[in-house]
Length: 285
Ligand SMILES: [Zn+2]
Image 1 (cartoon, rainbow, N blue to C red):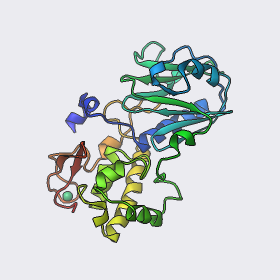
Image 2: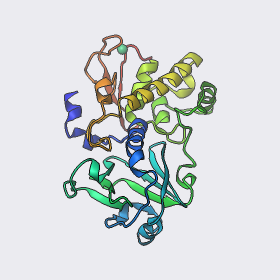
Image 3: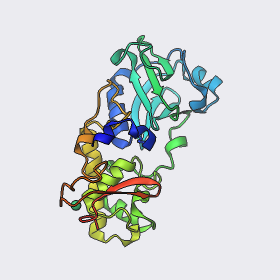
Image 4: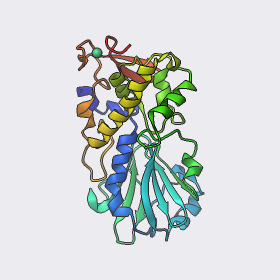
């Protein structure tokens, strides 16, 4: 795992996934729900998708945060009359300023949202790839996403029927946010390892028992990721500035050339759909 701890992760593009974004939402909730946005002394216009950067601060100011939740990889602030959606992309971080570091210590602050209790909600983003949307309904942005894999509605029958409608290679399918929301490269590799399914398989070649194993594996790896508060491989941190622990519990992801925890064959790393893909060639078939 030595190379995972290096800055290599930045160039490989490791994005927060469902467990990381869920951890951010849980960590922020008590500091922002019920608070009202005041001034916005810092904004980075290029990261605002909608509305115009001129309108953004004016429309946000005075709105109260009613709930904070997650859909896929989006952080969603339900406000008095609008919804603010933040996608962290590779290096976005959301935190409340009194929690982590003295003001000025973070060189990558792109947005400062002053709150009515004098605290500040900070959006920091080294690479400026994160995106903010201020819209009247969250569904304007997230309406086309696939189901939430941890919701009660995402049953085994739902997954079977989604799989029956699709063709194509299974790993890229799991990464398709319109198929299922929230899964990225890490948890796709982990779920396929746990389900003993080769990531190169065609999705319509999976037998029913393999589909069932994959369904349970997806939910299990995501729940485990949340339990360990996400994977801090390079940039992701919890809103209190500390690291998640999931990187210490990977079975396949980042384990190339190490023994498979299940069968002790050597974990391989290949390129699949332009993504680094880790799997055990012996026990994933
Ligand atoms: Zn194995």
